[in-house]
Image 1 (cartoon, helix red, strand yellow):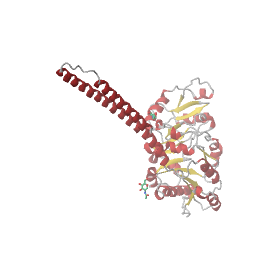
Image 2 (cartoon, rainbow, N blue to C red; image 1 turned 45 degrees about the vertical axis):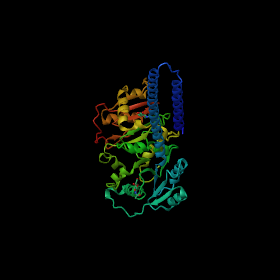
Image 3 (cartoon, protein in one colour; image 1 turned 120 degrees about the horizontal axis):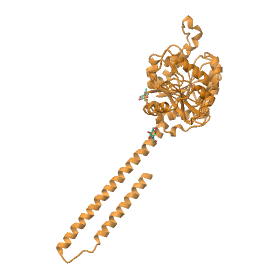
Image 4 (cartoon, helix red, strand yellow; image 1 turned 30 degrees about the vertical axis):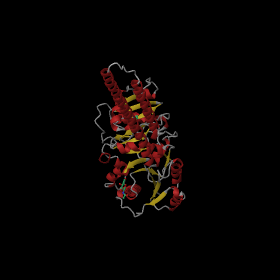
Length: 428
Ligand SMILES: *[C@@H]1O[C@H](CO)[C@@H](O)[C@H](O)[C@H]1NC(C)=O
Ligand SMILES: *[C@@H]1O[C@H](CO)[C@@H](O)[C@H](O)[C@H]1NC(C)=O
């Protein structure tokens, strides 16, 4: 509308201008003494008029070109907003025999902006009737699918007590096949029944979706910060996002393309460690937030309850809504990030971890702590209250070996030397 009106106004002004020019030139007094002189005057007049028209044409062409550019730019912005509106992102919730799944579902339904855009599909294993009843109470707010293969799994004798992990892998494989090959979704967010979500959970995944599609060096968007404890995040920066080489899981989005690749070799057990193996990861990264958009409210069952008590329960859940779909997140694309972020890390001043801990660091800019060995890494992370473990040689949250966190509001990069050559798979 606005573009049409602007072009109309410019057009009218140009027409009036040309007419006035023509009139003013034609009513100029013409010397009538000499016929030849008159002819000459007319020729000059015609030349000057056609010259004016040419100049006008140039101006009109230029104005039209500018308008076209403006139209294109507006079209692009509208297109992106429209495309995001048309993207369907289903949430796949894994359930088994925990009736507390309602806590997870309540949060998802409470914060879901549009049931058509974000259909919730609960996949239940285990045939646990009470849990199924809880899920069915939600009626048409969600769909329930049930893993049909309840046969016993043959587990090597040594791994008898880990049978649960075999069942989980079988369930994941079946449900993801349903999502991508039966329902034909092009992407999905995976949530487990013990997760609760932040108010901008859907906004986060919708806003980062274009990155996942565009950047083939990304294979997941995760809602989870493994070092997301209150003391080592900056609660005033909920908009901060990072790339990480460590697969975080715990509320994550993948595309059908990634599933087509993984499904052909999906493991019988321990899928999350398997997925972190270099053969699966193939140097790809995930996006993770500064403040987690999921939190686990306690796990009984196969997973280690100690890990929950010691660590998971302290992860801070974001409370503030960040309008990710309206933000420019291009800084997370590999080429830009590797230039800007990684460059900044190695420009930052080096400090000692003990000085940081003792409050003796005076810089007002992000700082860097260097680690050289596995043991040094473990020692520093323990002292600062960070996770100290590795999977396939990758420290939790690391990107190119760099673990970024906040300490009393200050951004800190725990980083290897600048001549770092890649992860050492023997670090564990
Ligand atoms: C599945 O979706 C893709 C687009 O994502 C489409 O090209 C294809 O035709 C669909 N297949 C079926 C069987 O609906
Ligand atoms: C978005 O951010 C990128 C990278 O920081 C920048 O190059 C680009 O110009 C920005 N785009 C807009 C529309 O501001």
